[in-house]
Length: 512
Image 1 (tube, one colour):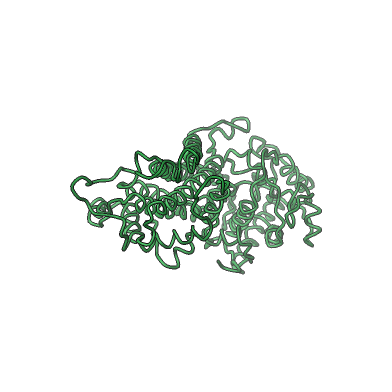
Image 2 (cartoon, one colour; image 1 turned 135 degrees about the vertical axis):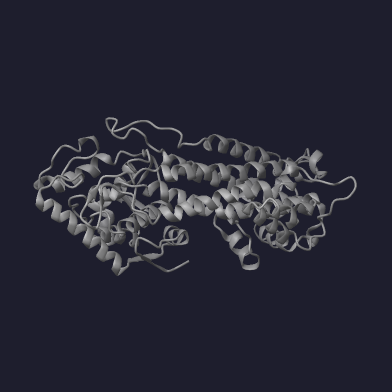
């Protein structure tokens, strides 16, 4: 991950979002971006001096667009906007989401179409670099006119208001600024709208979900390969010729991953009389996982467009025009994030079915619930229950949020995206599916040990098996463990990226 990110509004990548959000990489503004911001601000100041009415500069907001506001009231208007729009509810967004929100907002403003002062952008960036993290409730956005409520909570500490975290402690916004050695600011004309009118929150949440979904999609191949090792599955279904004639990118990549992971395995077999095909959850891994990968790749491309886009309103064009458009509308990302949730849910769904195949004696031929002396021991019985519960929850969460709309703002905003709900649900689904896949990996390693075949694993499967066994031992008896502790150890390898990072050092697992 990069130690310092140069922001110019145009070249931010998903990997850089992660570097800032999760690894606290520092950021600075590119000189050319500073000039673009200054030029845009000068246009706003010229309009204000002329007295010509321009939405968001010297008028009210939303359905109050026809109400003129005097120069003397401009500063109070901007502060009022933030105070009244900060009406979010619920648990606060996690630290990494908040940092991603701040980063993406700064990057958008640096494109030079928002009319904000450079000093205000620098103040927000200073908060990010100093690790002053606003307390932002996760609920309350319709995804149009952007993420008004949560972004207002982001701005409050910038004004010495609201609440923020500093060094992990929640305090008043002013106290957090003081401890970080920063000063509160006063907003000038147009700046309130520039800061809160846009798709930043839904994009930040969805970007983190997308990044995690990329790793999850690859790890689902790892889990599937271990299950095939445990079942002595057939590899005929992964030969390249059958996938090339369908030509779906994710399917082709998945089949290649399976061949890589299972290379040199002595447990897998070829089709033979009496065993010519496996169940769908094994045989159709390329088709099932591949479909999810295609979906994730589509969303990744959309995210990298959106994190470098201008999404506030009105737009200040270089020729001096002030255009009231609809770039704040979240629909272009709401539908992709719904799609992301569906893709991640399917990964969890098929993984849960493979967990069932592993723990079910009638399907695996192994001891019931993957434990010696079943009856006295329950082994992995309830791990499948937990996976089933998560998979079922995912099915509810995967209902598309973007097909819903409730009019707002005296029916001025009469069709909204619900994109922030879509992004939040996608992130929850990814987390649930991470747990399911981690459970499958752990259960497959237990099954492999019960079969006493682990020295003959494929090269990739062996690498993963060894990493798991460094963290979690074979479970001999129930009395020796509390199983959630053991699953947590494997889940951590999945969630923190360490498992996929180690795999990537040796093998290249492809998304598409």
